[in-house]
Length: 499
Ligand code: HEC
Image (cartoon, rainbow, N blue to C red; front, top):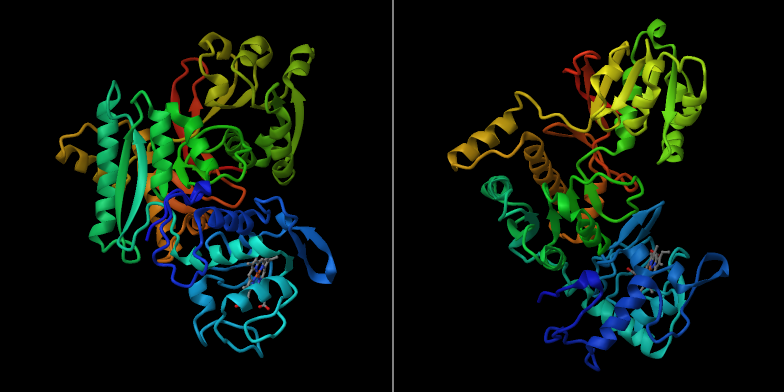
């Protein structure tokens, strides 16, 4: 049995033919009420829910949801030294196999003992459960709804998972001016997935791809629907659907895509395969910190109007290890009579370089490509040295990349620009690794946690690392030396890690 739309919290159209234990038979409304209790610790009937925790403190149920400790899928979790066990009905009713603390028997649970565990903190044999498991003040219909929900939780699966198959969604331009690129990218994703399937799939399942057209008129709606029917989304090239990809991730659908954007992406599972602007600056600061002592001098970090505080906070953590530095605002630099300093790290819009003009004579600039783009050559002619950082450089002589391109030629498809190709290869590689680590008992929750644990994974174009609060995976940038008089770029470091 398969349930749709679990992520949105709706269990509409639920058939309970397989649920032979429930008496009276659980209705959709009841299961929804149970789901709300389980996931958010609140009663959809507005009954108060109280969790009595260690020491007798009474908390609102919303501060101690079952899902928060036992996982959305009920399969259990360990966090901060506390292990909340598997409480899916299959585990609770199995005799003798539950992993219990010393001195407890493993008598199978029934509905009455389940309710007793929740309300009085006694296990199936009447032993006291550890205080880490709160005692809940829940009554009547709420308790009935919660236990009905728990009894079928193990039957639920996130969308896109069957016994044999995992479906991953993607959205690409399949019509319009970028159609050729879109088709080639789709072929690349398919080739990546075919390779996994040829090696036997992952944990007994093959992978399939479900593609939507990013150029169709109703692309936003299609993307939202895709998020509801697939396990996760890999979107290497959907520049016009960034807000929509964020919206899908907000529904707890894991998304892997190159998205640039505010640092505060929150905790939604949107895993970006691009560096953030701040890691690009970090890469420039890192370059400076590796210079010989006598060349390094003092670094002047020039802060613009936008993001200034966040940038300062980020660099203030890192710079003390690296050498002498100071922060100045772009305005004070413009107002000041004196020379701005030898090494300038710019986090400003290109306008500043133009405004500073001749004040830059003899200085050395460290600038993100976005800070220097379009600045007329004449302005830069008197600058002594310029180092430019760009988010990503297409790798040269990367065997994986070459193999992919020759495969596309075989298929008579035009290879998309290298930068886009890299994003597709990264998307597949990251997804494969995370699926592999998630194991056979797959859920979105497990996949998200596997993605968060990816660390220094080698991918075309540089390593990727994510974390529970780290959604931008590429922590560094490609560095170029720019010739001040001609503007010509030469590669300095293909991948410079952020400080
Ligand atoms: C603060 C974390 C936390 C919350 C919230 C929580 N639990 Fe627990 N739960 C635990 C821990 C830890 C144990 C294991 C206690 C032990 O081993 O003695 C446990 C044990 C259980 C058990 C007994 C399992 C067994 O194998 O004997 C059941 C059933 C259970 N919890 C159900 C729930 C339900 C239902 C909710 C929500 C209403 C919930 N828990 C909320 C942490 C939590």
